[in-house]
Image 1 (cartoon, rainbow, N blue to C red):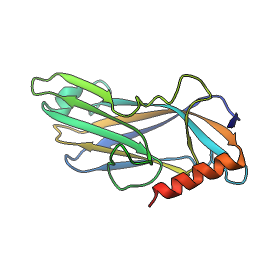
Image 2: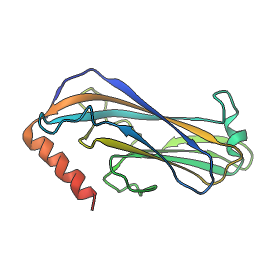
Image 3: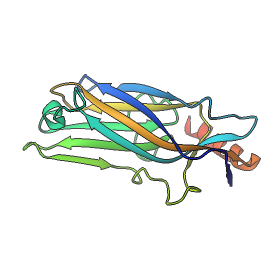
Length: 173
């Protein structure tokens, strides 16, 4: 289906969520990795989320506050906010929760955001932007979410590229 053009590399973006109940947005520019003429796509192998407080060494639960949750999603279309898990644009999703007693729980709640065992597996993206959305139910202080995407550049057959482009366009509706 795909011919590798590069080894796996990592894209990162940090998002600072500072207002409770409000979506916070960031984008990752993938335009230099995708080329329609050459049927070149970005193959996403895995997505990881790192949750930190106001500083890299801050206590995350203290900054988040007991009984609160921090949500994050990566999509390949701009939906303007968080989406349901059946949305075709959804690439990865995760959360961090602090229970009322200050216990923590971090979870990836989609696939587990790992798209296969080998380098041939992955989610193909032909869009020139990836969209990151963060949302906190409540906050004591600002929270930082770092998204780490392991990806590679691939060349697709004409049929495969067209199928992915059509699916992405259909998901836009």
